[in-house]
Image 1: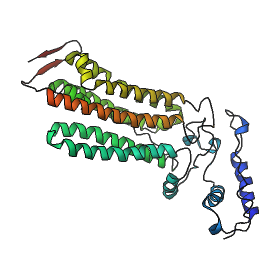
Image 2: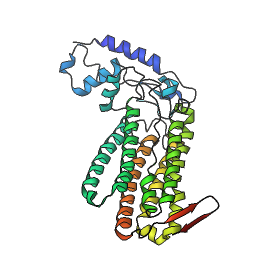
Image 3: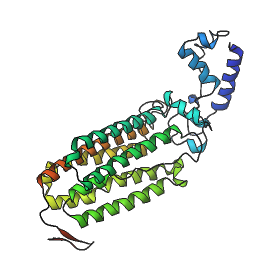
Image 4: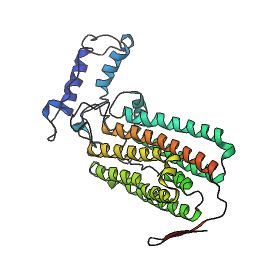
Length: 344
């Protein structure tokens, strides 16, 4: 069906009137403009005869698929340094799903964790196949906690970024479940009581963090620093059992068991959280990283890298502890704030 040029021009004019007004915190020069070059030559040309790019250009304007930051409602305006290519609010699940294949400010956030989820599922299956004969029930549970928590973390993150513009109620933050459980399991493989205490603390801490960050209040943009700090604290929590394990096993033995990879993992998590909190690099170059290179994308990539570093680290722990150390006799531990001793 032919689309009259006058209709397109009217829509462009109304779009500019709606979305090009200035936000007081941003320069006026960042107003929205549409490129007419690929459209003005098709005043009476049917959509079926146009190229894919040409059809997308007209569809982009007619449906107002993307808007500027200052055209967003408060609940979607998380980062005012990202100026363009934002999806407008919609009550259509179909529109949210279709946007997965389009290019906008959330595209890379969606695909990094979508691909990451698939890769972790494959890694989980391959690990069980390759090591099933060496795993007892406690090993399977520990690795399953790691993989399932990682898969859930990335899956919920992917869904969040797909449906983030559906409604304010869908805009929730799903905190990562802490992946420290399998590390604690193998660092204190022969110390059942101490292992149980650390894992219990991790569990309570993770649940409290998840409830706190998924609350309606924390979904507001002004709580972004709080969420980043909480994410960093979750990464730093591993210092306690790691330090204790160094006392039990010795630092040289810890690095033989792959402790270096866990240290790099922690640094990766923390670095990603800091970059996310202070919004580098878009803070210094507003509008240049609307599609690629924004801080949230760097956080996503750091999470993926940290998950695989963590996986490799606990694999090293698994092969070293299980193959080289045997719990000849049960070991009991007295654990308190003022008294920590080992007796057998």
